[in-house]
Image (tube, rainbow, N blue to C red; front, side):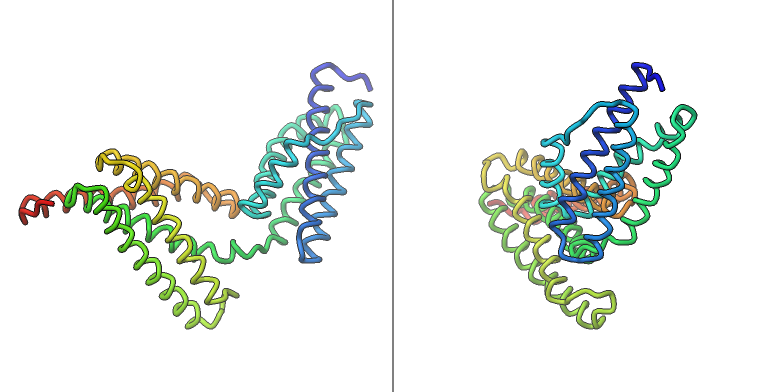
Length: 292
């Protein structure tokens, strides 16, 4: 079959994607401890290699895995877990499937590749079982409470106290106490449910408290580093929005959910509470006549 320059370029692009995927899935399989997860990932790696061989049959050109892409997904796995990395990789393959359907007329084997890619996704959905995703509810609880409560508290403290050192001190005491309170509540709640959803009470508490504490220190950091309390509040708002965006993107990819809806909902609640607390702080300062 004579390839046009455009078709050859497209096939080489798919070759690159398939050989990258084969290497990534193989490396992920070696890192996992669960035998069934390893088996499925290895079978997918082999399928990616078969697809590479198919496109190679037409292009007659060898393509090597891209080291920077492999390293990127390896880092993603370390930071966000293998579920997130695999889902992100599958999103890229899903985009390629549209091209496969257009290629069926020229290359009949493209239809089989497209069907196999669909099977990959279904197999992955069935096999994904990662600890951190079992405790997403606990992380959401910690993050959401910290963002809503502490951003609101810091806004109120900013107007009422107007001193970055006092705001930071008050915020730290409030945030750390609330983190321990939330962790304890999550422990008792999970224990009362007798692990019906497979969650360990202590781990659930650690995920909730840990997410809360990380958020606390991130939001208070500007008040520890800068002097202008209005600038600190503006940076805190930006940090809160960034935390909401990053976390919801993680959930959207790992769980296959809508990013926009979750982000707007969580950001709207947090910023709404912050604005209300800002007004309350101003009113408290005006009517109580407190000067610090």
